[in-house]
Image: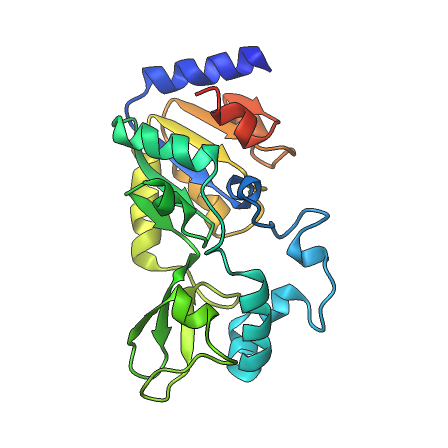
Length: 238
């Protein structure tokens, strides 16, 4: 493992256009539960499966039940960035990392200081009235009683990509451009099974891809370096 981490450090030192592509595993060490592990949200018992609750159709038809789950399980305001978020922000400040492409919606990359973050699945920090499009912050939504309403009477919706909704075309285009032009792509904390997001790494044309994840992924065979360990252990050495 030490040998692999040393190789990872060398690749970072030799690269000047690094893109980081991350998933839920980036934030689990901050205490935020992931979705698909044995203790994840998808393996907990609710009146409805989380996949159904977090769908566009469910939000429209069962808005009160949606918000009961959302406020209970998706509130990331109490969490702080971990060593991985912090090190990535430092690497960006040094001019090494040009972009962070994340599947997470918790805003922890920005909280750690990263500036160029592409949020494929949106963010809990942004919320909009479905009627007049007025912006509301996360505190307003999470501290509201029942279904959060706008002053115009409209229902407020999180700027989070729900099941049955498409990704933002502009964010996708910027992510693809960043990945396609990177000389080092670091893929971490993701099962690479959630599409279309996972498919974006296919646009990488650079020299080196590093894959860091506790479990095997469908892309292990195309990476130059695979580290099956926790992100915290790896990034504290960077």
